[in-house]
Image (cartoon, rainbow, N blue to C red; front, top):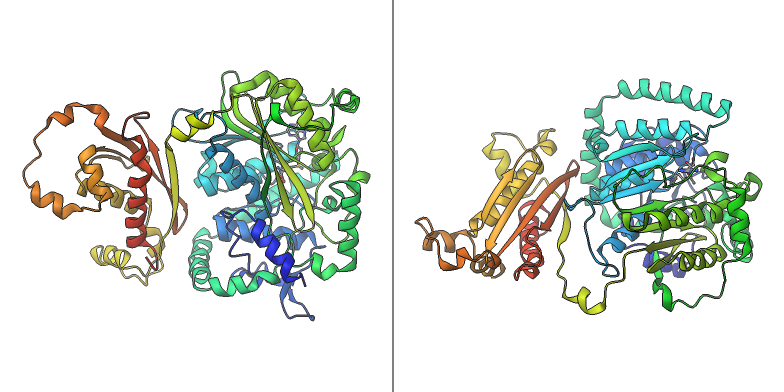
Length: 594
Ligand SMILES: C[S@@+](CC[C@H](N)C(=O)[O-])C[C@H]1O[C@@H](n2cnc3c(N)ncnc32)[C@H](O)[C@@H]1O
């Protein structure tokens, strides 16, 4: 069993917004909700805790499948042997990017002009995990690229299995020639695709929605139990090979750790993926780099020169993205990847290996970025070995990037690194401090026993105990509440119900009213007649205009976003306060304990 100290460290370093930071997956609960997962869960004779066999690929795949469905409302599958992603670990990378996008390190510009975040996942794999997580957690748009037929077909399949996300994700082939799987791998995976498509067409989706409804109730009711189960979580060690990632010495330590205490290795760690932003930001010209870009980088590049490009030729002319991300093939050979007998997370040679390993692969991203420059706000990649992090940072300096950021992802016994760079000039401290936030968001987890919801049911003549209630508290209800909230305070509101947005304009005077919590009544009673225009109305700069968008994440969970429309106006700074008031009001109406 992991020591208390280790558990504390892991908990402290998991990203605070990671869904699993406070509520790690509860195998027992998942098994009771999803019969397909039940056969994989057993109870440890040592401590009676529920576990799964990490050496069984079917068990790790089923865990990923139920977690994606249970916690993210995502339908998902991969064929035998493909790389099986760990959801908490992968979520940490997404949240790190979220932090980069909202940081003041470089000037904030929205590439798409509509406040939608647009990302590019290099090597999305059959599992398409980053686009699925980014779209379901944060409403981001994605292009996911890959080179193998199997990856492209299954990524497409996973996107199409989720109609609520499919508008957000495009799968694109990288490299003109395309990298084929071996005929055996391709035939096998295609056979599985056909079977899976058939299986899913027979699925009664309503039943699953119902399970999620029950599941979310259970989850919210049993937070305490879930917290107590923290130590019981079997590790979802990233992949077979990851035990050899890192400096050689580190790897040896890690492997011997695993061998010396296999129970511990399969305990809480991996599922509690961690993200420690300790290396933090470096402005490249200030970086103290011990390592010069050595000849090894160019040698590796020669080796990989026949490989398809990663961004050039895949990114279309004039396209712009907020970021790219990549979990690269780390190894030069399957021998180097090695086989970790303790885990079975899959990973085919096409996924794990490329000529020159990760150093050559990420170097290609760097070269492409040096051509595409500001077409991306941030370029990012995972890095498996610390020595490569240093080499790559040196290479970044050579190509003239303006900013480099690094982070460390501590995942159970493993360490990996996040590397980010940009060609956008670093923002000066003073400028960044003056710039108010122009977009923000919060999550609303609807509690069905709340009075507001009961009111809605009564108005509609429906029984709250009826099974369909979850679908009745929709983005539309929240949208209406947003409009009422601002209209009640005298703001002008214009809703667009088809795109679930409401545009709000608030005058200086009404802004104060909202901030001071003066509600409908005070405004309505003193303004029973239509308001006469005042001199102030003629001065547009004394208004703040913003757009509120509501996204249904999964039944019962909604994302509410605000984006400033008249940027640079004197009231711009008020957005965060107004939005906070809205959050309080919606949470009071729709959520538990507020
Ligand atoms: C380690 S896997 C990552 C899969 C998935 N993103 C994940 O995190 O589980 C690396 C992926 O990169 C793909 N790949 C290899 N060369 C590529 C290239 N030039 N462009 C895009 N993808 C590539 C492989 O086919 C493989 O699916």
